[in-house]
Image (cartoon, rainbow, N blue to C red):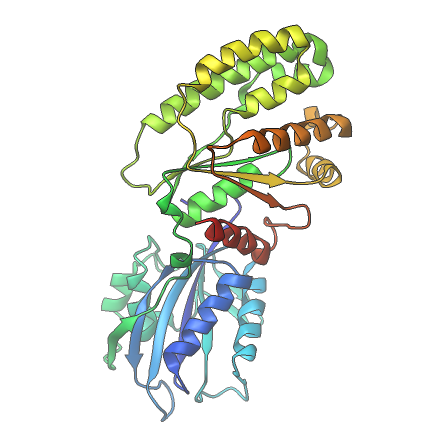
Amino acid sequence: MTPPNVNIAILSLGSNKGDRGDFIAQAVSQIQQSVGTVVRVSGFYESDAWGFDGAPFYNAAIAIHTKKSAQDVLAGILQIEQSLGRTREGQGYSERTIDIDLIAFNDEVISADGLKVPHPLMHHRQFVLLPMRDLNIDWNHPQSGKSIPELLAESGDDSKCVRVGKLDSPLDRYPLQRYNYIAIEGNIGAGKTTLTNRIAADFNAKTVLERFADNPFLPKFYEDQPRYAFPLEMSFLADRYQQIADDLAQFDLFKDFIVADYHIFKSLIFAKVTLSEDEYRLYKKLFDIIYREMPKPDLYVYLYQNTERLLQNIRTRGRSYEQEIPAQYLEQINQGYLDYIKSQQNLNVLMIDVSELDFVKNQEDYITILEAIRTRL
């Protein structure tokens, strides 16, 4: 599974100068920090220098999830090469501290100045194909249609290329699977669904996503809140209860944990803002009955964004029925979440202020959130 609008890129790394393994490990770490999430890593392979007489190379391959274009990925890895002492002089082969090649980008064929994807020589090189095979990904060459094992069998490359060690995965730094159930929460437009999808794709988790788009009362509520507040909140409560009960009960053998973009307690937070006092008292009686039966998340992550940023995000995503949401309503919801968090003694709550972060576009900001979760771990 990959998150929506995220690209999968395969990179080949090599080094034959200095501490070869350390240069590759440093490059992988920098790629994780600034280019994309490293979701698969190969082992280290040692091979003879290709195209010139020089010391043997260490080679490896990684697969990344990235929001960047192929051209931006290339620019990022060239910058990382430079930071690790790589100098590109002339067109020939030479010794290097690090060499990073963009081998594949989704299933695309790209032919541009300075960028050829898939790499035009990949199918002739064992030191590229053997590490790629380690990644264990479902990828066929978009031009020949051949799988990695088929490309290996036909490569014609009989040079020495031997697996000699293990490359550590950057994701091992974030053992999120220690939690069985993580809930990502936040106000309207805080980015909770986006973050849920990214974490699920990067860490092999099952998603539980709120089905707000199917609620027939939502557009009506934004037009006439007093009239539709109670049926809206009751509808949300019933849907959330049913969805969580169903999804959490269905254990997925192929996923490591569950991550949801809401926690059922949000029903009470929104209801307190939208309902009259009499309606809220009735609603809370029903909610308390249901809430006692619901499983609680092992980690509750609250994404705080200030009202100005929330309004900006709401305008950007362009849902017509949300465009008239007043700032005061968002401020009330924010305060409701903060009051709830303060009242929770037995819930493992992590609040992250993301008002100055853009974890959709900036890999560094996404890593900042993972680091916050790691610290809580």
